View 1 (cartoon, rainbow, N blue to C red):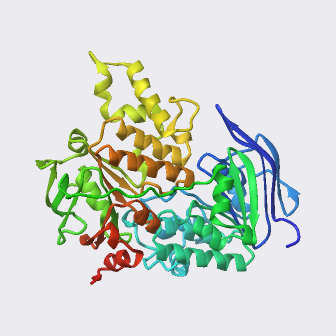
View 2: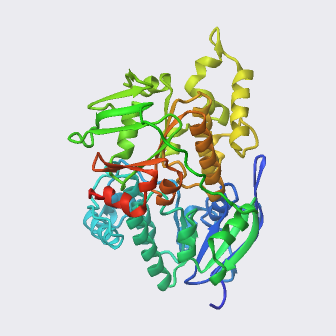
View 3: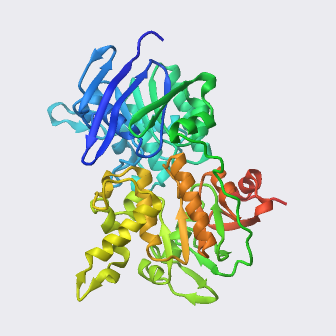
Length: 501
């Protein structure tokens, strides 16, 4: 290493009511993987948005190849060899895979007619899909892909740019362990080709296995840098949160008979031949594990009424309940916190207050008029209880960090006194400090008598937080493990359809 490829010095950025960055420095050398760590709201995404041409800094200096530059747009960043894989998906689901990969950069032919060379974009896109181990055709419509597959399309698009500097913002947050492992191998391959990589993730195991250096931000400032043998889980956490998290996973409660909330012979449209049955105790966290595509989210959406079940019975506290729509589920105290908070959990253009009170707006109305005082009080209480970081409850949700957006979704449902709460990937894209807060909240809810179903692809989360674990494979429950039976090996055997006996 001689001189840095990228130098960001004294970067400051302020948004209304928030100082996002306060004099941040970052250097990245050619062929180096730098992990950028920090809690949600620490400034990581803002710093990368400046490098990627999305935002302009209020002050500070940006250099590439020791030349001071201004990156004034996303296209300018691409022209300078900066590629960006965003945490939130940017795919267009009305196009196919190849059209997404080469959007705006389509090869053309026929001279002045400039017709898109479809054979070329598909053949080239297929090469990137093969490199990522994604066994689908580039002609596949994106709307038919899972979230994990859509994320891999985003990665293929970034690889197609032949970037010198690649920003990867939570690239594995919705990938399976096998898919994530493949991505890490691709990342190492890019490093060997002298591509500089800035890697943002809340999976600290990935950082310790992958990064050459770790730059930690806290509250918009540099909190410290680790390199080589200094990169350990505990040191990263201390720099991120300024304290030790001594009890990250709380001890699980003992579970009784699973009769409080029952799902009997539920058949979904995705797996019509397989019936799913399970029960949740009052005050229990039931982990729902399985590989991506096993049908866990389909079951959750059928329970909540987002999709109509082909067959099945749902019982709450010994009585059957009919759920034909989310309105029915809400009326019975059954709520779903979906895995895609931006698309199905929030209305991004609305304020925190409006999002929290929207599901029960009639409760704040009198004679057709909204009681703004009551509405603000509920929203403010929710923000205080969940430590939502925002200038006010009138802040637009789109301006919040991912972790704070997730907390707004939680505050919305908690304001309605849930009886059963389904968490679908509750800590996806959330930093370690916010994870600890959500785990503590889940345990408090369980202790108060709420039945909790936790769908998670994070094995550590499943093993650490579940009282029991139900495992799915191709739309069916292949086994339910008691706490003392739970192990990674047992869960994985059931997840691939094998027996543990």
